[in-house]
Image (tube, rainbow, N blue to C red; front, top):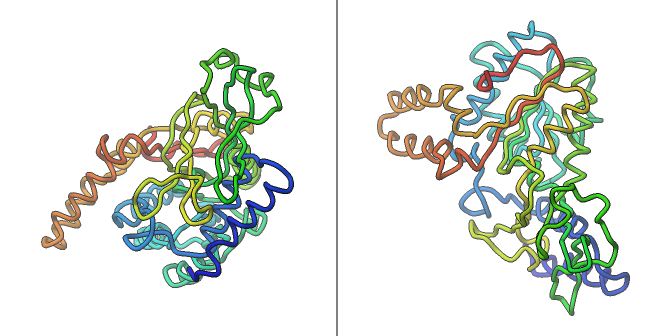
Length: 351
């Protein structure tokens, strides 16, 4: 980025904190990520991180075929493909290409706010339409939804156990140095009973925005039908632990340094998302490890087919498969959760 752009967000946050006092971590994270994603392509070797669709076409192809299979078993209703946070459009491009092999070509809607990424997506997914949320998507058919590494970037709140009780973690500023502190307001009343007496220093994370996105999605699926596949790194919570992190140049960084210049994320609480979906009336499947999910969808035979078609790429294809599925790579850290409208079939991979 240009030198005159870099300091603007940090200066703005520092000025706001100096004038009005420390801000919640969720506000800091939201502002930083909004700037970060709006101003760059963060993916690939030249970016800060690499996602599963960028590792191999197999990931998007299997997602596309799984959604097609689900749509077929649901009776082939009118349907639309929807993707939250589609990055470069690689997953959508691969999924739609696989769908087309079985003559399924749904309208495509990409939920994306970044102008920089929308421009790249337009090249990869011709004919796509964009929206900033579900409100901008027609309600005339079932929704086949994918969210890969989307929920991890949504703002989180952190509650920290102090000697005085549970407090919200805030972000303070000294000059241009940002640092976390404990607020003064007590939050003991909302802490799950099993954590109320956790050791001093324990941190409990919540993501109200993630639950709000899930509830909005549920409202549409209940009326229109359809399903959503949520893929991300995370755990089945709630649980104690600090997962707030920054990635810059494919390495971990201090998440409080240079806001807006690194990807800020937190592990996704799949337990809370699943419970929210059940409360809203959706059927819930999983979560299961990404490795087990892709194995069940047939990543082994697909990798073999690619190797037969392009033998000189055999080593790269095998390495990509291991990265996506091995337990010591992405296979277990990344989880897959499916939510479906009542009456819809169980998605492939979850039987």
